[in-house]
Figure 1 (cartoon, rainbow, N blue to C red):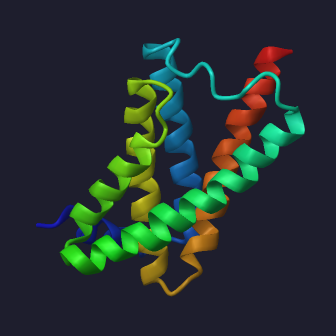
Figure 2: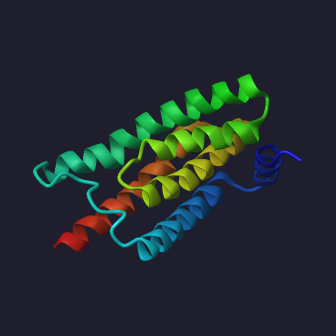
Length: 156
């Protein structure tokens, strides 16, 4: 049984909004668990000398657009066609997604899991014939917005 194929097939019966909301909640819970288990692993995301507006744009707008385009639209799509195995494509693209978030090893592990969730969401939405790029990008942006706001509130 191929996990990526059967999972995206199973999830396709749910509404896209419900899938995005579920992914957001799971990603927030995952972040909470990782930050509890590894308290210093999530430090250093923002450069203090950069403006708040610059960091907001970078984290909430730019990063989700670029990462979704590269890791889901291009890489996941290419890997799916090349390997003809969506489970392998999901895991390899997630591994590369996690590896480019190199703040710490626990953070890379957390973003590997998040990347796998975004990849499965992308495949599921794509198979439904909906705009997978924009939906996954919005979901990623929503998570980053919550993380950004939590960071700003913590620094007040």
